[in-house]
Amino acid sequence: MKTNLLYVFADQWRAQAVGYRKEDQVITPNIDSFAEESMRFTNAYSTFPLCSPHRASLMTGKYPFSAGMWTNCKIGLEEKIMLKPQETCIANVLKDNGYRTGYIGKWHLDASELNFNPHPKSGAKDWDAYTPPGERRQGFDYWLSYGAWDDHLNPHYWHNDEKQIKPGKWSAEYETDKAIEYMEAGKGSEEPFALFLSYNPPHLPYELVPDQYYEKFKDLEVVYRDNVPDKMRKPGGLLETQTRQYYAAVYGIDQQFGRILRYLKENGMEENTLVVLSADHGEMLGSHGLMSKNIWYNESIHIPLMIRQKGRINSSDHDVIFASPDHMPTILGLLDFPIPDTCEGYSHAAGILGDDPDSPEDMLICSYPGGADMVAQFSKLGLNHKSYGWRGIKDKRYTYVITNGYSPGEPQTEYLYDSVNDPYEMNPRIIEKDCDDPAILHYRNRLSHYLEMTMDPFLISRFG
Image (cartoon, rainbow, N blue to C red; front, side):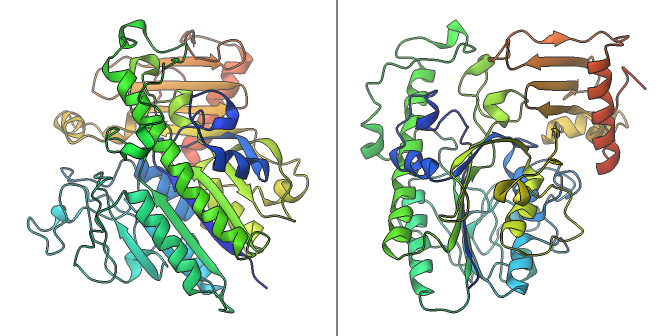
């Protein structure tokens, strides 16, 4: 009997915001219980800490740039960013192997409808999009989704036509309703299911969280991370409120995930269902004076990742380096399916089920200028904006980064962060241009390898 797949991921949920880690002041009893029964990946990172790029890697097993996703699917750019229908995605493979495939929640991998029609029949606005049945659904048959829309308390979805579905409840709650409904409808079927459930919270706007969850945190005395500047720590200030709201959303996700765990247990599905819990990227939440994501700091790139199949996968911590393109090949490996040649990521299936001496020692991290104004600045000067931004290497101890910046003329800078001696990344080593330290030369060579492999045009002027 084939194993079911349930892949649950939240948007902008950082690794620190899980109760059992005892870092952020979150309350996650259901996730903590799940973690006790799972393999917990302590070095899982978002290759490109932004929604669409990570999601493209998740679906294709490719690096974001290889999949054409150098920024979010959005409006305002000459290039219409989308996950191309020609890609071989995980749902295509599973469908071809007899799985019922479903997707519920935020997609953000299709081109925004306003790029093509100022008044789309679906009513999509800004970056949002209705993805009609067919090849752009990338192998998913059941579809209850939307492109990118952050009204968590009043969400909308599309199913098989352009009429919006507005359930009038918190998005994560409704999506959990539909996920349970999907699994229930398939009971008794000889076909296994592969269901992807994409929660938008705790993504901003932070304030759009139900009162029932915020009540637990409204009087919380926030303890900030050491790298949050004093100027942002004002009692009663904006960051204090937003931190409480973020924790409340994480608690709400925990409550909804708990409903799914109970359903699996009550229906005897724990041993026959591979359950993955993760996120697309993290959230700075004031660290280094920043909010949101798309930066190389740990709060932005470090994501939760837990995998459970009772009776098959041991509950333990696993410190292997796990990158965004690794999700698809790892899942296919665990389900005993061949991995398409198009995958660029690494399958950790062997290490999960036993031992793997060949697992990667590092991974690529990256970001590209993606704002319309940024792109225009480069274009006016005849420059390729995709040659700028930042790229780096992440391993178990160090983060190596070289940045050209997000506007023409910014100086190129090279950093090395030591997570053992500087866990909050406040005192990076700034690398000299003529540095001949073998460790730095190693990182430079590794970065050059990844750039060549992905045909990334990133400009490196500091070394050959």
